[in-house]
Image: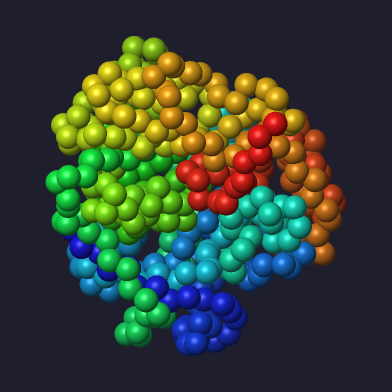
Amino acid sequence: MRLEMAEFPVTRVKLGNKFEYSAETLEVNKEQLISLIHQDCRIRHAEVAVVTPGERVRVIGVRDVVEPRVKVRGRGQVFPGILGPVEPVGDGRTHRLSGMAVVVTAKYEGTIRAGTLVQRSTILDMWGPGAEASRFSSQINLVLVLRLVAGLPEIEAHSAIQQAEYKVAKRLAEATVGLEPARVEVFELNRTNSSLPRVVLIQACLTDSVHAHSGVSYYGLPIRASLATLVHPNEFLDGAMGVDTTRCVGYYPTTWDWQNHPLILGLYRDHSSSLNFAGVILERIRFETYHGKEVAAHSAAQLASALRADGALVAWLGSGNAFVDVMLTIKACEQRGIKTVLVTYEYGGKDGADTPLLYYVPEAGAVVSAGSHDRWLELPAPERVVGPYEQVKLLTYPGAPLVSANEPLRLDARDMMVGGVDNWGSQSWTCKAY
């Protein structure tokens, strides 16, 4: 596969009466966007707003973030299986609007009232300590504010939210069709150097086997009981990976993160110069039994071995006992002679003195930290709030108190901040020895 990614930088977004891209300015027809969203009868009301870096604005009820992209040449279209038929993607040419994103917020209460499957949303501060903690505060964000029809089950609510954000993202990117990009980056794996080691990315994904949506989808199909699957990295760039929009948690990557996966982009940069990028292995984790975890680990390692991998970069998303699956995968790879490096966020507690990892095996000899999940955040009061709620729930248990979104907030972890947890090393961190 050969994919040309054509970049159109955006430094200004204005709401007007047409769709036009010129001189790094994107003009958006607000009324047409709202009409496009209202084509879905599951959405009873929609609004659109623009927020920019440095504004004392708090966005609440965040469900997902997506970068506008559109295919202009090649098979299929962006977001296959969701906006159109399941057609292979990852070749041809795709246009992207860099420096901006669509942030979708939605008022939805959910039918599941407790447990890990209860609906959740996050916040985004565009200034102050919250902005420093999130990778999404440094870009211009077009915010969709959705209010859904009452009583929708989780899978219907997710579908309505995702369809709206992806349709809007594609429509925005269509403003670049026929224009010359600022730059074009080519992604292909044809060139190899036989003297260099072969490296795979094993991307482990926490999933749920009983919920209607598993948390991660491939071509729109939720991943549940699947074993390891080989995926071409270009498919990520064209939107083949999706997320559950009813459970936005800080340590769950957004669609934007899948589109701009930093480990995939990093491996591509080093391809044929210091390593040969052999592809991505998508692994489902959080099996309910230890037996299931062992089989999943064996399957991923066996596939890496079949790809003749000398090394594996292991990344994951999620929390809890899913980390056992990750460590067993590292063990299984090392036992086959495949050297591994784990990229993970840490726990560690408020002061960084607690246990940083939930589980450990001796074979995990190389670990890269992407920062702490547990550090507290003190957020000052905003001047403006954008979103479908007036209050936020800082804890997820039934009956948890609500706090005004206009007030200062204290977060005892980064879960409530979209982009607040760095899963894959996309942000800049420094280390200090104590």
